[in-house]
Image (tube, rainbow, N blue to C red; front, side, top):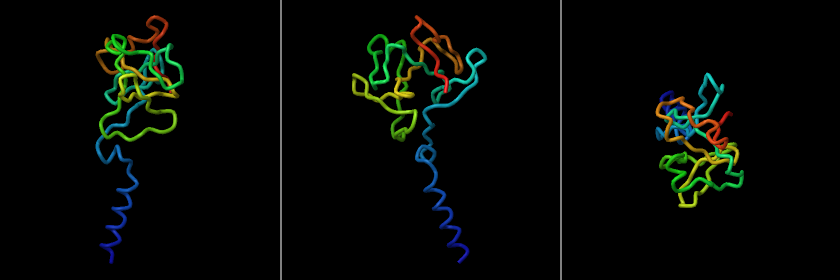
Length: 132
Protein backbone atom coordinates (compact mmCIF):
# COMPACT_ATOMS: atom_id res chain seq x y z
CA UNK A 1 0.00 0.00 0.00
CA UNK A 2 2.86 2.39 0.70
CA UNK A 3 4.31 1.83 -2.79
CA UNK A 4 1.06 2.78 -4.47
CA UNK A 5 0.87 6.01 -2.43
CA UNK A 6 4.36 6.90 -3.62
CA UNK A 7 3.33 6.39 -7.23
CA UNK A 8 0.30 8.61 -6.78
CA UNK A 9 2.44 11.39 -5.29
CA UNK A 10 4.95 11.20 -8.14
CA UNK A 11 2.22 11.36 -10.77
CA UNK A 12 0.61 14.32 -9.04
CA UNK A 13 3.93 16.20 -9.01
CA UNK A 14 4.51 15.56 -12.72
CA UNK A 15 1.13 17.02 -13.58
CA UNK A 16 1.92 20.15 -11.54
CA UNK A 17 5.22 20.87 -13.36
CA UNK A 18 4.82 23.47 -16.16
CA UNK A 19 4.96 22.07 -19.70
CA UNK A 20 8.11 24.05 -20.57
CA UNK A 21 9.99 22.44 -17.67
CA UNK A 22 8.87 18.94 -18.65
CA UNK A 23 10.03 19.45 -22.23
CA UNK A 24 13.27 21.30 -21.37
CA UNK A 25 12.06 24.40 -23.20
CA UNK A 26 13.47 27.46 -21.44
CA UNK A 27 11.05 30.12 -20.30
CA UNK A 28 11.06 32.96 -22.84
CA UNK A 29 12.33 35.73 -20.55
CA UNK A 30 14.81 36.05 -17.72
CA UNK A 31 15.64 38.97 -15.45
CA UNK A 32 19.29 40.04 -15.45
CA UNK A 33 21.28 42.75 -13.70
CA UNK A 34 22.84 45.47 -15.82
CA UNK A 35 25.34 47.86 -14.24
CA UNK A 36 24.02 50.66 -16.44
CA UNK A 37 20.27 49.91 -16.51
CA UNK A 38 19.46 47.94 -13.35
CA UNK A 39 17.23 44.92 -13.87
CA UNK A 40 16.54 44.18 -17.53
CA UNK A 41 14.88 41.36 -19.43
CA UNK A 42 16.79 38.93 -21.61
CA UNK A 43 15.79 36.11 -23.90
CA UNK A 44 16.41 32.47 -22.97
CA UNK A 45 19.94 32.82 -24.42
CA UNK A 46 20.79 35.65 -21.99
CA UNK A 47 20.82 38.30 -24.73
CA UNK A 48 19.14 41.63 -23.95
CA UNK A 49 15.69 42.27 -25.41
CA UNK A 50 14.46 45.64 -26.62
CA UNK A 51 11.27 47.45 -27.58
CA UNK A 52 10.85 49.85 -30.50
CA UNK A 53 9.05 53.19 -30.05
CA UNK A 54 7.33 52.88 -33.45
CA UNK A 55 5.51 49.78 -32.17
CA UNK A 56 2.24 50.57 -30.50
CA UNK A 57 0.54 48.31 -28.01
CA UNK A 58 -1.72 46.99 -30.78
CA UNK A 59 0.02 43.68 -31.35
CA UNK A 60 1.76 44.68 -34.59
CA UNK A 61 5.47 44.97 -35.30
CA UNK A 62 6.69 47.92 -37.35
CA UNK A 63 10.13 46.30 -37.73
CA UNK A 64 10.19 44.03 -40.78
CA UNK A 65 12.58 43.28 -43.65
CA UNK A 66 15.98 44.97 -43.24
CA UNK A 67 14.92 46.27 -39.82
CA UNK A 68 14.23 42.71 -38.59
CA UNK A 69 17.69 41.63 -39.76
CA UNK A 70 19.27 44.30 -37.54
CA UNK A 71 16.66 43.79 -34.79
CA UNK A 72 15.69 40.08 -34.86
CA UNK A 73 12.34 39.40 -33.21
CA UNK A 74 12.22 37.25 -30.08
CA UNK A 75 10.30 34.22 -31.31
CA UNK A 76 9.05 31.18 -29.42
CA UNK A 77 10.79 27.82 -29.65
CA UNK A 78 8.80 25.01 -31.21
CA UNK A 79 6.40 23.62 -28.63
CA UNK A 80 6.78 26.56 -26.25
CA UNK A 81 3.75 27.18 -24.05
CA UNK A 82 1.41 30.05 -24.82
CA UNK A 83 2.43 32.88 -22.48
CA UNK A 84 0.09 34.66 -20.09
CA UNK A 85 0.01 37.96 -18.25
CA UNK A 86 2.42 40.69 -19.36
CA UNK A 87 4.02 38.32 -21.89
CA UNK A 88 2.02 37.53 -25.01
CA UNK A 89 2.45 36.41 -28.61
CA UNK A 90 1.73 38.53 -31.67
CA UNK A 91 1.63 37.52 -35.33
CA UNK A 92 4.16 39.29 -37.53
CA UNK A 93 3.46 40.41 -41.10
CA UNK A 94 5.23 37.27 -42.39
CA UNK A 95 2.94 35.03 -40.31
CA UNK A 96 5.53 34.05 -37.68
CA UNK A 97 4.98 34.52 -33.95
CA UNK A 98 6.86 37.03 -31.81
CA UNK A 99 6.84 37.63 -28.09
CA UNK A 100 5.49 40.95 -26.78
CA UNK A 101 5.89 42.49 -23.32
CA UNK A 102 2.83 44.43 -22.20
CA UNK A 103 1.71 44.50 -25.84
CA UNK A 104 5.04 45.78 -27.26
CA UNK A 105 6.97 43.38 -29.54
CA UNK A 106 10.38 42.22 -28.27
CA UNK A 107 13.60 42.19 -30.28
CA UNK A 108 17.28 41.36 -29.95
CA UNK A 109 19.96 43.71 -31.32
CA UNK A 110 22.23 42.02 -33.89
CA UNK A 111 25.29 43.99 -32.71
CA UNK A 112 25.00 42.69 -29.13
CA UNK A 113 27.47 39.80 -29.24
CA UNK A 114 27.51 38.62 -25.61
CA UNK A 115 24.81 38.07 -23.00
CA UNK A 116 24.15 41.21 -20.99
CA UNK A 117 25.35 43.68 -23.63
CA UNK A 118 23.03 46.65 -24.14
CA UNK A 119 24.58 48.38 -27.16
CA UNK A 120 21.15 48.87 -28.74
CA UNK A 121 19.75 50.93 -25.87
CA UNK A 122 18.60 54.40 -26.98
CA UNK A 123 19.82 53.90 -30.57
CA UNK A 124 18.13 56.52 -32.69
CA UNK A 125 16.13 57.40 -29.58
CA UNK A 126 13.90 54.55 -30.72
CA UNK A 127 15.16 51.30 -29.14
CA UNK A 128 15.17 50.62 -25.41
CA UNK A 129 16.07 47.77 -23.07
CA UNK A 130 13.08 46.27 -21.32
CA UNK A 131 12.88 46.71 -17.59
CA UNK A 132 10.32 44.61 -15.72
